[in-house]
Length: 127
Image (cartoon, rainbow, N blue to C red; front, top):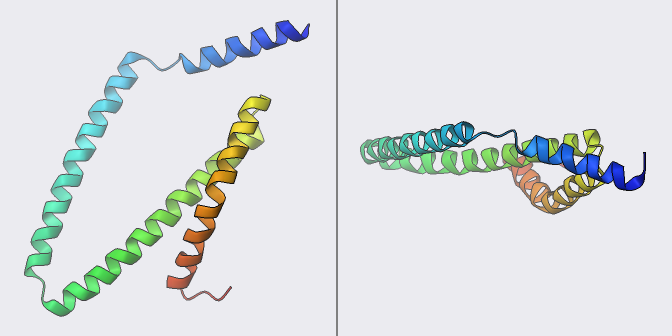
């Protein structure tokens, strides 16, 4: 197989994979996003009602717990992204896809390290 034929074949494969998403999938994702937004709105309203009823001491504890929850959630999100991009790097056959995954890993690494440092601090882990 010639180099140009290989390039054409790879391009076809990429286009095939990318074109697998149907308009129905896109519409379902939009609907899901709308429902998720409604759920988040309702959850934030419920949280506000709970905060109004809480005594002052509980509000301080809740604010600290909420801050910790955000730190943990952010760390877990970054950890999942790093794992995803690492897996893409390992399994990709295309040099372009490998390069993209590597660049994303490089981009996420400082943010991940900072989040890990804060996460370890709230867990009282000595590094």
